[in-house]
Image (tube, rainbow, N blue to C red; front, side):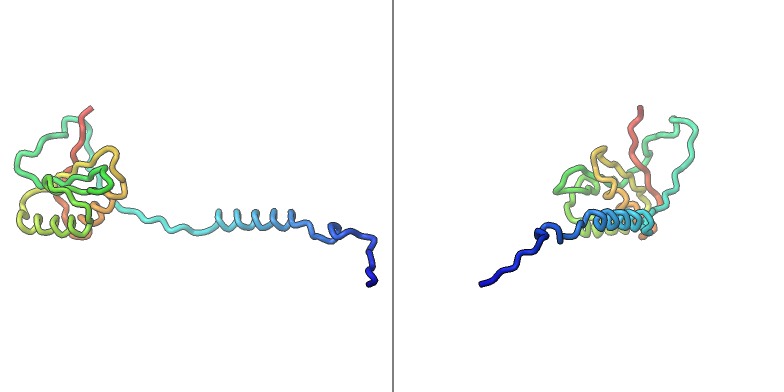
Length: 139
């Protein structure tokens, strides 16, 4: 069998992909920086106070809502813990219809997820539950 050998080795015919990869990365960075990212926000009206003396204890019975740090049970309503968001919100609406005059007090664990609190605020805003207080620690 006759074989012909070329003067060039096979390595010389492979294209150099480095410039192409550089261009792909530059285009990718450009697209990531110019892409429109939708930001979801929740408007929260914060009362304006000038003194710390505005913090006070409630003078009548309240409905307490707890936002917990636990992975299994993330919410509590008057001491009853819930792991399921749907069960918690159903019970919250039942409690609201049973005691419409009682204000809500929200107490969140310092290590609890912010997402849990935002979900609660969005739910309360959706169902027009406005009479709420947030438990704060005096410093």
